Image (cartoon, rainbow over all chains, first blue to last red; front, side):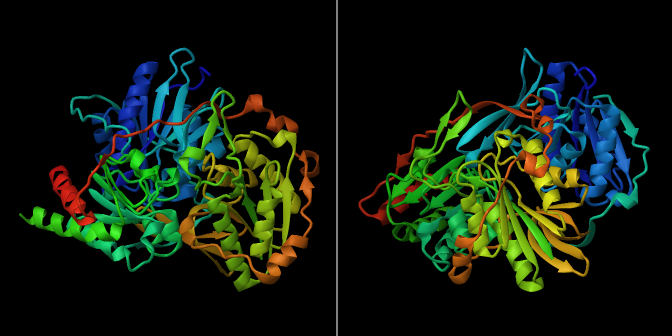
Length: 333
Length: 264
């Protein structure tokens, strides 16, 4: 597979800056390309990329491919796939990295389908096999119950989407040198079949689940939507957000957008308070990155105690009001 | 309106971790005894999405599932929810395929069925969760794809899809036929009941082999797989849990609050 060389990161921009995931991808991409002794490139797509090319170089890129077009202003699956696929066919990367975001989750499999590569989604770690020089991608399977290592022996590029906030971001170094290369190919608008009709920003009350420093989650054991009020009160006092397990969301006690777990959101707050939830792996997979996990459950055998740092074995209804009141008192002091 | 839904049978993802066992040598999961496999979570939502479209626009729903053993159970489940017809794709050549192989087989079956306006898949499977079959399938069929759908409507000759993004959703429109992958936010699947349950029990579910769908076996050659699983392990993550106590739950709560206030 000597025809394919180097690592290509597919960048994302957010509010005129490189998205945090992109800086993380440049970090891991730099490591992999140094190990292989190959170059690290990044593709930036947008209507205006400004000085972000230089920015990407400061974060470790050797080459920055910049595709600017009004049609790339927002993410569009057809447009982005076309530009990224064309670039891949030209620069023939050995490895391609994307973020496991709403963009990467759409673009990566699409691109893979077009290029015939080998893709692993939602990777937790990446390394290079010292003997074969192949990319080893580790990803959760079976709802996080197991981890699989995936290898692409001959398909190229070897592709991976990386879960946000798993790898450390690249360190910025202003003195780094690199090359910004404009992508000259014009987009073919007739290949854009999917049209954007509208974009709706949903305003969330309080803190966003993914960004919250504290998350209070409840499971089936909470019993009703009304009882979730107790969790909301605790979250409010701690300046956090409320989440739920799949059963709790299915019951309609919390909105589906607040589901924490393999099939919902993955959160990594400082403090995760798990209330009346047993700790099925599919749920735990969504909160394992938390710094501290606290379990409140009346069943002392519940699996959640196997991953928690602190626990109380009791009915949550007898714990939460006092916990909330005491924390309120301590935090206002 | 003819919708084809691709569904997969998976081990129940809600089993307690203690029951989850793997064979690291074979890189396989040992099915937990006594726990019946289920329809993959997202695929069930895809069936629900198809049923809602049928409620509104009439038409037909065809369900296909690739797998071995009692795969007809999940097809029958979809039939009892409101699908009209179902097929099982079962062949030795279909076992342990990667995403490309899976998409190839599904694509061949879809082309055989023909005359479709919409293909629905779950956003990913609840077992291996590769999360790419729908997109590769669309590339193979040469039709548009919209992923992570939380709502689907038909507007004239187009489908209009709400797609989940980080801070809300976008509304997208694509011509038919298209592939749409469905996320759980689309809402709860209906519970099969009454007549549909009875009718589903009586329906024939034909089994198609590679030759029935005209699958080229060289496309399914595992030595040409795009990806290969070279390792499977169960992560050990036993933390030392400090159980906070007190004479009453109330007192334990106060003690916990004192500890937590130092951490945040």
